[in-house]
Image (cartoon, rainbow, N blue to C red; front, side, top):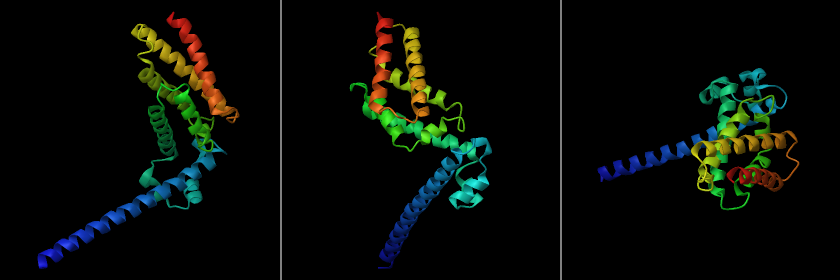
Length: 206
């Protein structure tokens, strides 16, 4: 009987620990959401180099110790936000696939359209000048994985040249679309990207 009570107590404690873990996760998510909102609020008004931990904490209503639990400084925060965007792109690209016309680009652009302009801010003059290069590198990764079979007739160097051309061109079109406030629909821009890539590749492969 005593042994059973001990086991039951241990089980109860485990449940409590798991429950506390869930509550902690929820608090962390809420804290990061508040910091994220504060960061983008500031980034609309000034470059990241002028954003201070103090003002982020004041806007997010947290203390500095809480901020430093998750981030080293505003640049580290921006880097983590950029990685979130890139990871979301990777997941979308994996789900869309190349078998559907304009599928990948349409999904990526739709995702950007829905993020309240946050990616546009990260890629703006106030954000990270190298973010467009990171997006271009991601596009290269997507094309390399998805179009290898389609370009099998080309040499390795020719395929790399094609991937660089498409990823660089598409990242610049994306940047232009963001600068214009995403006025054109994701479907229309994705169609333009794919048509331009297809036209050049057709001539290049021949």
